[in-house]
Image 1: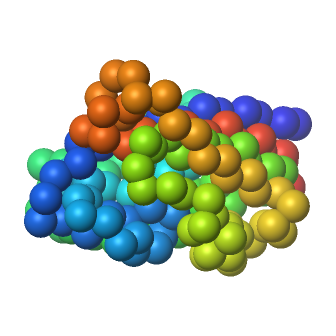
Image 2: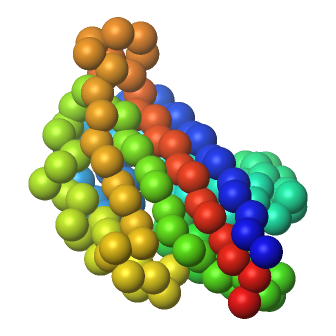
Length: 158
């Protein structure tokens, strides 16, 4: 049996925070505001996996009212959700994702992001697509006020 899920996340860019996307720190004058490290790509992937199984979303699994998640590394949350997927006896077939940012340019960082995420999720590089897009200077993302990401995950019963 196959299950598909979608995930989405957006965070505001602010000064005084590190920019963490795809599990890596990216040098930039601003970072993403959030209760955790605000890694939009990982958050979109996290949301897609339990979504495929009709389980709770990221906000329910890791509420921003819980101090134990304050500034937490999102790779820790991703590992937890992946264990949940395995507990339900599913495996990841593939993930297709987008990072939407006007700046900084994401393409140079994607190989390292794929390396980190594939290791955590026990999938090959051929099973993870990370694409970089802009908003052509339109809306909050295009005006460099935010960064967003979306993901689609296909799961198969083990």
